[in-house]
Length: 308
Image (cartoon, rainbow, N blue to C red):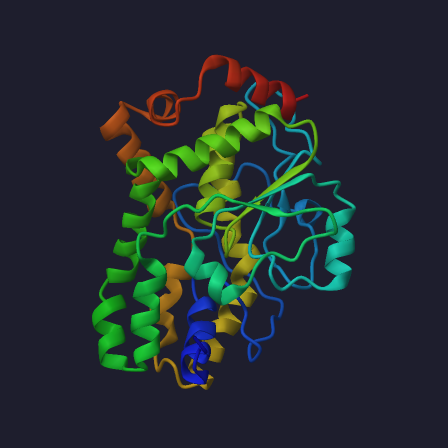
């Protein structure tokens, strides 16, 4: 069935929100925002770990961090990313240079439908491994597509957007299918002998949680792993601000700041997932062993592959 012009425009606007796809009327510019409170990075955010691309803004090498025992997480082994559907030909050449043999896509089908499939170097196909957004895409489609400032305030204002994000993070722990996808990705990293990349749409929530798990598993201090998670706010700041500007100029929202809690990562969101892990599994270690089913052999293989 043919998708109407109105529905397509609305879909592009929704994709541009916390979900991260840049619409044609919102070109990125350079800016930065302060890191969120409580958790802070022990290692500075450096441009050297960013993979500079024209069609994505949050593609990073997971390596470079120090572990508790003074070792360093190897670079060039694992990459984290935001959406890859808008990559340019130049970007494809950059990705090809990374030597990737596997790309894992955490997006749900609705995101893929509106944002498009991954653009990847020749010979690479994405592995679909959807992690539920807990209805986030549909919620945004309803709120923003209405163009109704009253309805948008009712759905997203007064702390509702942030509360919804905390619910999304709880599903990283409570949803069995989500746990299976995270576990499968960590096992892939443990067994792979070639560079691997995983991504969602903004590269901040599902991708951020996966990276936090990986770094903690290989011995990176919690504060440093949380700092890597929060760094998405810096890398995405200019892009996300331009998206909000575009939504206002396009007549979708009178108050686009309502979506800031959906665009950002926050220490509160990470803490929510960790608290849920403690409640259900007795702590972070219990989540890894009971929730994700990771055994000591897998953890040792991860450490062997990633640290040295």
